[in-house]
Amino acid sequence: MEKLLGAYCDEELSPSAAGKCERHLRSCSRCRQLVRDYRMLSHDLDRFGRQVGEGGDCSLWPAIRAGLLEERDAQRSPGSGKVFARILRPTWVGLALSAAAGLILFFSGVFSTERLPANYCRIESISTPEHNLLIHRGQSDGLTIIWLTE
Image 1 (spheres, rainbow, N blue to C red):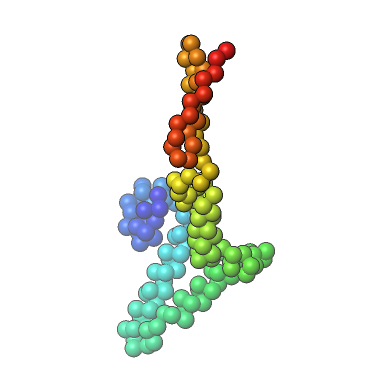
Image 2: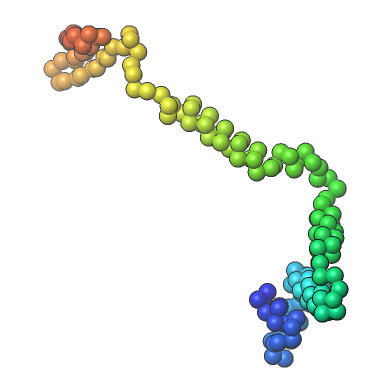
């Protein structure tokens, strides 16, 4: 329905489509606000065109700035403070997420190497139906086999 609001404000719709828009506007506050904004903008542009045609000041900036300040003040709630605005700045959010990702990677062992400690030895256990074997390989890769039987 929002796509038809511009044509509705400019009175470009057929009577049946305009009636449909009017019925929708009775129940939808968002679309009513869009129509008000569109009409106000159209009015300001018409006034601006007349000023330029009459050789007047053609700067709309003071009116735009005043409108933006009013809208900002209307949206600002009394409980919102500068502390939250500072904390939630995109710079701080990005930095915090990067630090968290770095800590997760560090503690997950991504940066660890495959080097084994100097006192490493490998012990394997092999069970067969006849015997239980224990194989011990020391630092010098010497092989010691210990036969264990039950």
